[in-house]
Amino acid sequence: MRVELFDEPIALFNLDGEILATQDRCTHGDWSLADGFLENGVIECTLHWGKFCVRTGKVKAPPACAALTVYPVKVEGNDVYVDFESGKVND
Ligand code: FES
Image 1 (tube, rainbow, N blue to C red):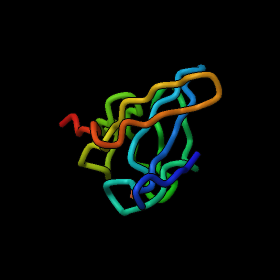
Image 2 (image 1 turned 180 degrees about the horizontal axis):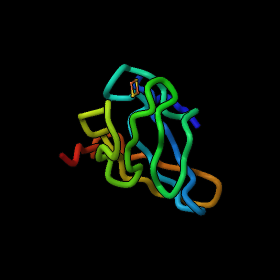
Image 3 (image 1 turned 90 degrees about the horizontal axis):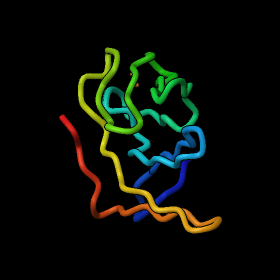
Image 4 (image 1 turned 45 degrees about the vertical axis):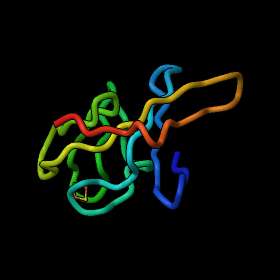
């Protein structure tokens, strides 16, 4: 799902119960990833089919060539906390 933090779109993914967060802009074409296809921890962009690991943000398939920013997530009950300031890019 897509959320906004400080005017930045963030994509939240549920990976078998583990919540992960990345930037919600594909690095190839500024396209939302929140509506992409998630399989085995890899999100596929719906515009040109680039793929990214949602855990590390690393590119898994072209035409994307730059990694996503990933954010630490903490879940407490029904609340999801994204540490926006600790986002990092794993190149
Ligand atoms: S916009 Fe995502 S792969 Fe091109």
